[in-house]
Amino acid sequence: MTSNCPEFVTCISSIEMGQWVRRGRIHLLADRILSRNSLNTQDDDFSVFASAEMLKLEDAKARILVYFKKEDLITFSKHPCCKNKEIFDIPIERITGIGPVLKKYKTNLVDYGLVILDIAVDDVWDKWIFFQDSYEKIYAIENLYKKIKIKSNIFRVNNAALQKIIQISQRPQTPFDDTSNVINNWIKLIHCRDEVLQQLRTNGHCGRTSFVSASVELSISLIFNKSFQIALPNENRLDRAINRNDFSEDTILLFCHKANELGFSSPLFLMQLVIYLYAFDEIHYGQKKWEPIIELIKMVRNYSFLIQNSEGQKLQVGKKFTFLNSFDQFNFVNAGDFLLFCTLCNLQTSEINDINFIRELDTLFGC
Image 1 (cartoon, rainbow, N blue to C red):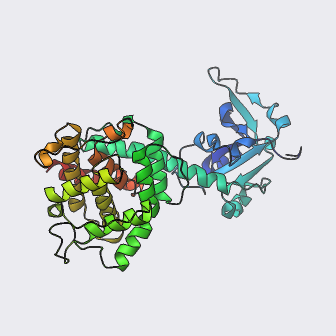
Image 2 (image 1 turned 90 degrees about the horizontal axis):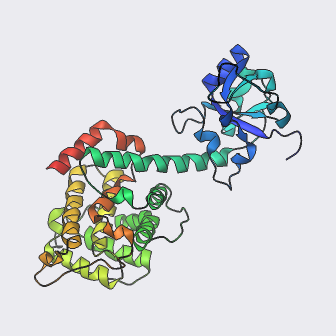
Image 3 (image 1 turned 45 degrees about the vertical axis):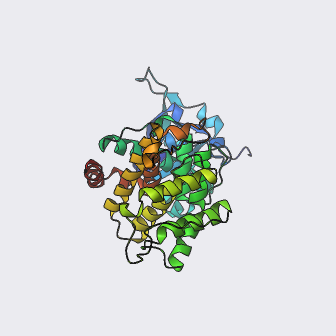
């Protein structure tokens, strides 16, 4: 960084910038002025954007970066009426230059009559939006759980792992580090989700009963690189979408056996896999009917309660299933609650917060 480069930066809204130009000065909290190094993409420090005025998350057009030189920063006077916080009183002449958050909005800054610097931060902004959206979505889903009266410990386990699932759901090719067995299996599934659905669609399985066995066989082959075939009872009708009736106790028992044989920590993972793929296909490519999706999720929740309460023998006399890798904290989360979370990850945060959507799910879970 040369001496001609500004060393400090703050992010303000276009409204604040307009007032600064009209009034000739601004009162700005000192903590909002940060080192320009904070815009380094390698650091994953998004303080510049997080400390700015709260606007619509993805609105880069309404945000402006203001740059200062170090020698100018030390000349800022403190506002005489502010004692509890350090507030700078900054004349507009102290601005070294301004810049857009995204290059494409550079021409929007011309009317301010200030020096426009050619400093690119597009990559930093993209990472900030990606991180912040996944961060906010966790709390949107948690809030939805509360409103539809689902008591779950999923949000008390590991929010960083949940955030990673959201990020992978948004961008399936996002790299990830190994965490828990449960999380790793889900991330592998989401990584290959689009490819699995494309092959299921090409081979005519989507929207048919054969989706159940085909999605399991193809997923195990593509995702986990294992040759796998499964013959399910009552799968001879190929003219309707899957529903609760496709999961008889015999089918569930078979899925549990196979999940244990394949080394999945949850005996219900294969059921979760099928329903997740079906839900994703229905939400994004189908008629967006939530009733059959919620019915299937409720079924998984009920069987998960049986297994976690050491009542797995109710699936079949004399047979009890347990969770492998019991040290994995996610094994203590209800499988249906986890399935619902992963399904909701595929929605926009605004959709999750929509009051009509919340009411619909509240009604469906109350049935």
